[in-house]
Length: 331
Image (cartoon, rainbow, N blue to C red; front, side, top):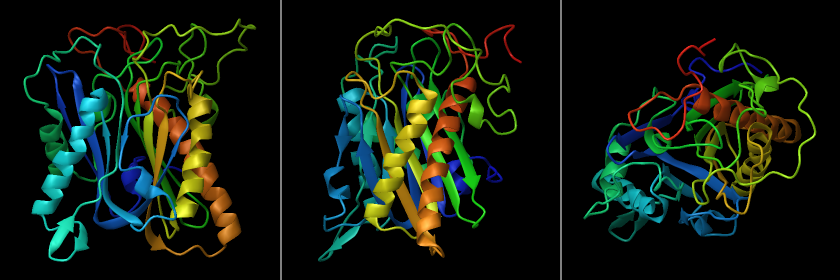
């Protein structure tokens, strides 16, 4: 496997990502969309999720495809970003047809960034407007690090952010990951700058420091980050033609990538969640082998994307945490 030409989730042909953020708010929104509906699924492993329309992504539900997936800051307020995206899609004539009406299907998930130093004293919820702006900005290329839903994100010891990565399988299938990293856990080992995801790094994409030296035995970890400042939300995508059930298996496998890149992960205080998206452009020629490799690629792409999010974060005035590439530390 090698990364696609962009090393972004948009190496999956037909997918686009849009982002918007507010520097005063210290928060933002990231939207994944396409020109036509795509199959989607979800799997939640964190103990404190915040979601919209995820129940309809079960394989036995009526609607099997969606128009967009939304990752947002803002805790429960950020779910309003989905409304902004849905309103904008409806104006474009997009959505599930019900009589003469169109109902855009826009599942979403949120992370908690309300205590990151930004101005949260709004009189009107800003996330619907941020969601619409992110949708209108959707393109094949997009910023990583301090952007979109990861604009105000943090981790146990470094500033978090938005990350993405991709891989092309020997079969020609493409897999990509997109993630907003706001974890209770750490992306690096102990007090070092070595990423837990280093064994899966491609082309020094997050510094090339290599695996961490062997860590000494540790006592049971404590939640060092302030309670509530948590949750990593992600999307893994492929151009394969998958059923909703097959897409859900890919999302389940991808959680292994989160566990490889963030320690600890899936805690009671995180709302860790992975969406899966499948555009259906390429038929599986060997369903058993292809499905096996899709899960593996989703796992490694998500681990890499998490490290890239932290690696590419940039400093902003009022930051409550240091950036990995701080002064005098860039490799």
